[in-house]
Amino acid sequence: MSAAMSSGQKPIAIYIDADACPVKNETYRVAERYALKVYVVANSYMNVPRAPLIERVIVDDGFDAADDWIAERASPGAIVITADIPLASRCVKAGAAVISPAGKAFTENSVGMALATRNLMQDLRAGGEIIGGPKPFSARDRSAFLSALDLAAVRLKKEGFGG
Image (cartoon, rainbow, N blue to C red; front, side, top):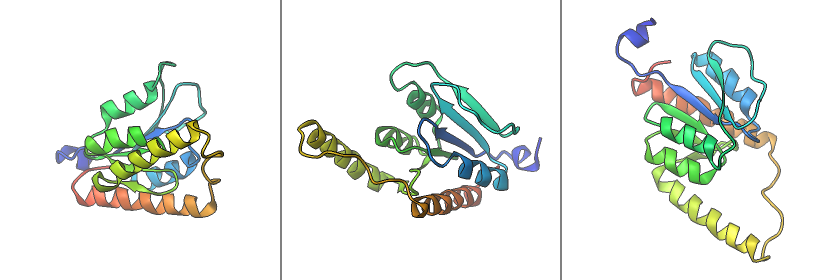
């Protein structure tokens, strides 16, 4: 047992909503640097590196099964990586740090507006008012994600969570 664990610290865990997540490799690198456990959650088989701190979790095909698995484990000391705003909202309410693949940190103050905007855009798309989807993922998004994940890991360690 590590010194951090024996001192009563809760380990930091990273949960990746892995289907269509473009920053899995970046997450693995940051997690390795801080010795953090990573759960790669998907409803189909996905290749993950063979590493003791990376665990593949395959959930059933049920609607929102991956989201439910992650949300049930989200808590203070957890970092959740997702572009799914309803999942982000659930995890923020549970006390987890939540980051989008584009590096946007969801907070109690921002997730409500993000959810309202998502619902409005969904309604506009359904009504034919808007066509097309989000802008393509960019190198700037990847860089913003790396910064946000690094900041979250450092903040949680400062708050007394262990690696």
